[in-house]
Amino acid sequence: MKVFYDQSEDGLSPVWMLLPINTLEWQLERFYVPLKAPFERFTTEDFNSNQLYITVLIEDLVRNWNERESIGISLPSIQNRFNAQKSKNDIDEEYTISDIQHLVVRMGDIEEVLQMNIQRKFKWELTSNERTCISTR
Image: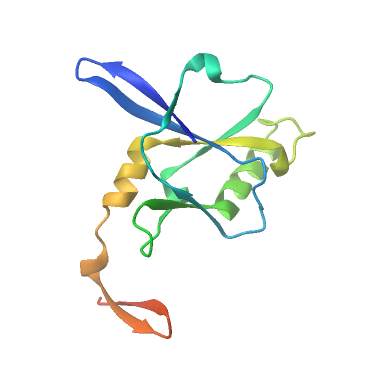
């Protein structure tokens, strides 16, 4: 995992996280990423134009309530977007989802999802090793 930093007057700010996914199992519902700093730095020169990247959107991100130092990524959501782009010829038809070599995630999206506090809007109950969410609305 590497992070692209932007230089600002306050110093370096993390902008993009680059996740290598060479062995990702696309049939899974979610892919969890541990977020342990410090992150390895990469620059624009590190991008390889011969590799396939896909951007993870904020709606693809899932907070892991059991492990607060990780973030989940919804794989079906990414697959659906990949297939939609492919059907519009935005992605060459020879590529498959398994050809994606890196996910690119905006650091601001990760921070926003990790800071979400929706627990006050829901009642949580512990049932047989799981937390069950019941809406209070």
